[in-house]
Length: 477
Image (tube, rainbow, N blue to C red; front, side):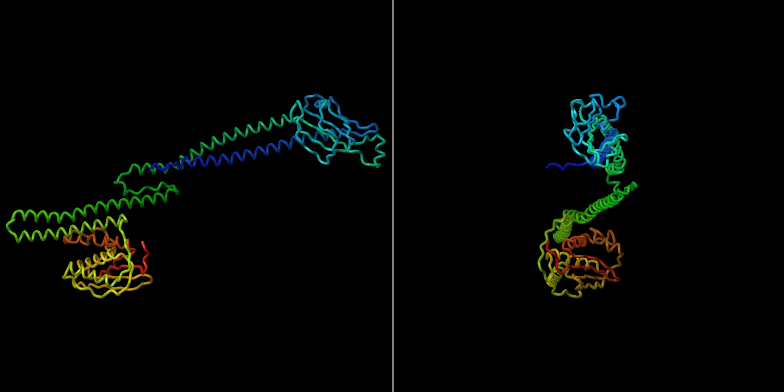
């Protein structure tokens, strides 16, 4: 199976930032180019319109007809066939009244048309290329010396139409230069932004790189050394979580080390006893009664070792969540009687318990719950101070049952009440009796967690108690 493809945070940020900024810049430059083109076009149109209006003002209505008051020497741009200026003046009867020499045989308009407002269009005028054309209608000025002035009340003067074109090479060249400038500016900005983004990301991700290098160089001995906060706000929660994780790992390794030491210590005593019994039996094989006693002791030691190994296997299965749970409806009173019977078989001299459990139906795993109660009963009998005053109680609280087992005992501190559920924990280290390994309460806690039963230890002088909180309706697993 192929490993999943890894991604680079830096590469992902660079691509997204550069792509986003590039799109914004391209959109901005496109808008800027459109605005510049519109501005240039408007300015060019204004210049063309000004020239058309000047020609309209120079057109005079006289008794003999129209007179165009302009000199070819003063405005030579209308003389050269190559332009760049061209004009036509049309009368309302469709007659071409005047045209520039630069037009030669060409036409700007096919016929007369009335334009109440100036109209701008693009015109292709061979062979000199594109032009900008403005057409507008106007009424010519009257010669003050003409008799037409006296008769002006007879009706308005006729409207003429002027068409004026100007080659737009300069406009297109200006716009092209603007596009080149924008393109170069865009490339320079993108190069600068690319450099700044890479520099900023390198600097911004440097604390994360240093953190990775620090963790890569650490060994088991540095797990208890907290990571220093690099004063980067975004890394502070990561540092805190890593410190918590490292502490949990260090605690776990320490627990594993102590667990191994405790297992070795617990097994060393019965193994030494077995070796001693074997040596003594080999030395005096003729003493049959002593040899039988030795074998009886070997049986007890083997049972103790077997029980400890079974508890260790149970702990391992519970920690790896490999316990198979088969829940069923149980009668609590019947289960308690069976636990009491097993306890009498294991310890006929065990003191009796005060109190009884009611015939209440609960849903749980029968064998696991029986093992939990048996371990708690054995623990109470083994560690109770005389008079033992063993008591069992049962009550209903809200949506769960509370089963309590209590006995007289030595005082416990709050820390000791928490630590007693650790494997191999003893209130007085080195005080083992050779038959209690210190695994019972640890196994009970794991089984209760698997059965979704809450467990807590209390001490109110002189009574120590263990309370089990069992839900009335436990969910199926």
